[in-house]
Image 1 (cartoon, rainbow, N blue to C red):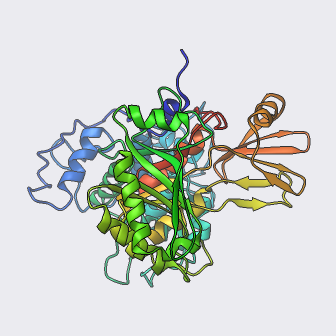
Image 2 (image 1 turned 180 degrees about the horizontal axis):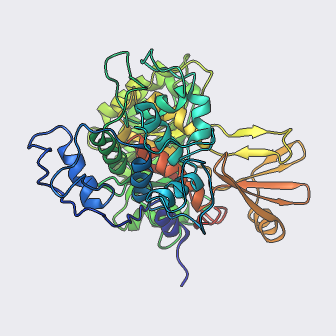
Length: 487
């Protein structure tokens, strides 16, 4: 049965943790003698035992205050992610014998990158340290490469000198906290309840209560798929031009008019684009925007104009605040360039307060001299940096990530948006690969390389968004959009 590409994309965005593994000691979700009512970790312990990630140390004790061993944490982590080791036993560490109760789980953690072989021994009976907990969780999520870049990011803990990027990421995501305002105690043994709390925090981030918001941008030349799954539809039909006396022009295509008339339970916004020169729009221009939204029967406005750079950030914030006042009962979404590593960070605070949603545009990552020319759209490392900065200024629930779903062609020194025919030809004739480094698919055909996002790409970005408490993506529509099925 033919399924709509957006329905399949949304299905791919759901991260599934298959929880497995039997308990050697019958354990209970509650009633442990060493977990009194009101204990700070009681809820996390109850969840971990109920889900089957943890065992009790005995039938009626959890082992509060006892260190979490490295072998036990490998078992817990494999259960949390639903990992199974592949194939028969093979030796990874000299001190992990065949038949050890934890060996299959440790092997699964190794095969999934959560555990690495930096020395010949694993020290299974040693207590896992707080630093090792953070490192293992970040690796388990697949963010080891990002951690290498995050080592220079701001971190309040002066006692973290090794694996700084991993600790910084775990701290930015809210998975770990310090032992003081400026200390983390990285070498201190982690207790069983501390490990339970960290896993409980991660689980709630990866499995939010709501389904999130999917925003679809419908250009005038595109046709909306009949069963497109989205919560918010943006009709890109408005253009704002001019300076002090900016003019607004709204022209709906037949497909956009039909989408506005039908709605089908979706929130429909008027999409308006413009140049930075219109940021100084007078009160009449703001009134024109508000009037177009109201008279057109829209639920709100999607504004893609300017960016919060150092020279115009205040102007954009002021414009959005005036629009908020003019449309108190309408939805107000604003597209803006996300902060980039190595650049001065603009102030997004005013935008975050006035807008209902801040849709982030991220630059592509390009490497022309590589063996395979790279054009990675919204790579995880740039998504991480933007979220780590923005969540200090804007509520995570207001953030959305705009994804480049149409792909990009590289041919020699040329980079261009491919036509539908070009995409079809390359995908049919070329060899398809997936870059774990950039979480992008690419296909080569002769001298031409096509980079694009597929279902796996979307799943990885959605996971990263959820780690920060955000759960919204913004996609384009039309015949030019590549299939977003899982791979």
